[in-house]
Image (tube, rainbow, N blue to C red; front, side):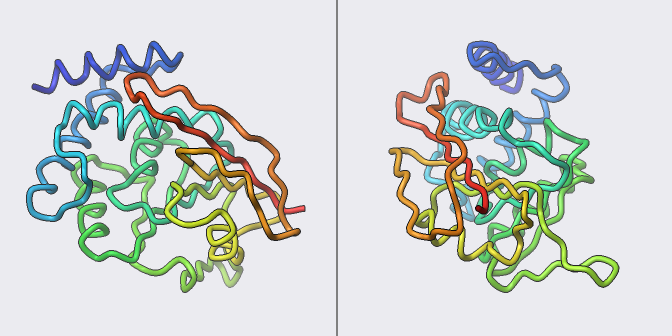
Length: 211
């Protein structure tokens, strides 16, 4: 089953202008197979069919990767690791922190990190509002913060404010486009229509920065 899934993934990636090596694609397929296996017990995602996961999880995440710049990335409300784990697999030179308050989901993320040998991933089981990373006595700020639209854009911005530096890029993934921001501390620096092969649904990305 693995090779047909990889070929399906490879075709979709090429349609979107993305290119990854066969070993990277195999690791991405291994990841969705892990989701499918754990899904039977832990209900990680509503998508049950692993073939559907190619477009709805992998391609839907990787379409955003060209917008992810910088070395440190925080994936808020990571859930089953989307988009954080596909990003980590395809960008081994970057460091990713995946945070979620759901214990079952962070247990899965830890197992995925081990099985996929993702040394560039750290998993945090905590509410993002309570997460206070420090290194060498200094507060850590992230280059990029990613979030699927699990909350309003303003809620995403406010809950991660203490993790944002002056140049942090906040990437909010949306279905239907909603560019409303009530806070006058932020501005949208980019609004993008995303074309995800095989999805058949709207996808948008807001890139937001502090003013």
